[in-house]
Length: 161
Image 1 (cartoon, helix red, strand yellow):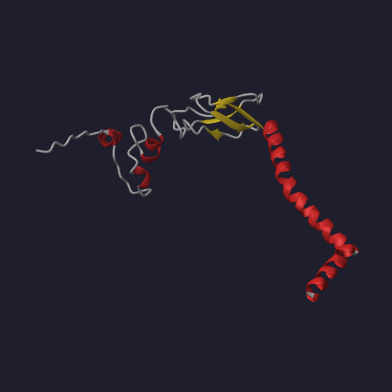
Image 2 (cartoon, rainbow, N blue to C red):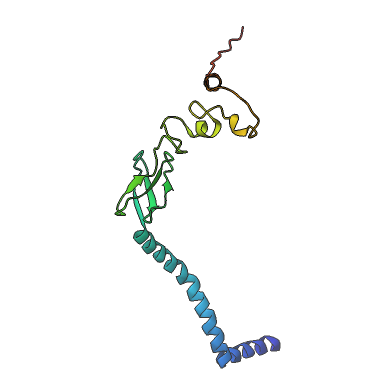
């Protein structure tokens, strides 16, 4: 019983001393900061978001709202994949590119897959990996025929007997 009473007296004297008051002040400050900081950060982010971003429906599909920075940095619509940015006034959105031409290759027809892997309008795709100066020597007609041949889709239906 005596050690318990002695411990209680020492703890009471510690908190009654100036050192105990400093301990309480630091502990209470950290406790208050732990509870106040998330609210301050949330309010600060909301203010920043209202001042430096604009939200509007996607200019391409109009389905989902898109939020973009007012400095003109492009952002992507999660529904259709079109790049949009804030207009010059900063009160709406505009398209950065043709929504059907994700790689800005021109033409407006084709998909991202065709742009990357040489579909109908992007050449044969294999020529991108040829060694420079290999002297392939193909004429323009042969290249067009090869491109047409590789772009042809063959649909085969298999029937079981």
